[in-house]
Amino acid sequence: MQYFNMAVHTLADMKKWKGKFLAFKAYYVGDAALAKQAAAVLGISERTYYYHVKSFGQAAYSMSHSIKKAHEA
Image (spheres, one colour):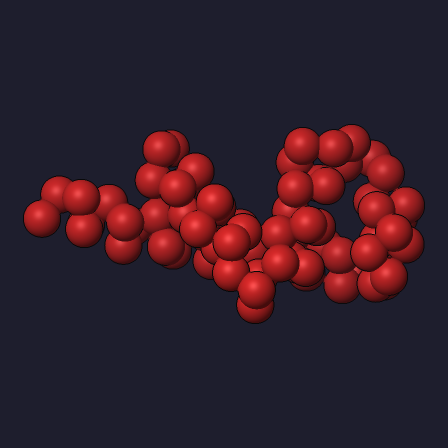
C-alpha cells in the first residue's frame, strides 16, 4: 500500500496527470455520491470524471509495482 501511496503522490505532481488526480482525489477523499457535482466543478462530463478516476488509479497501481521493484533492488 505504501508503494501505491508513493505512486499517487508522484503522479499528482506531474502536470500531465493533474486533472485526473483531482477527479481521483474528489472520488476517494471527497464524497463519491457527489460525482455529478465534482464533474461539474472540474468542467467535465460525469462519464469523463469516472474515466479519469479509473485511469489515474490504474496508472498509480502500475507505477506502484515499478516503485516496489526499485526499492527491492
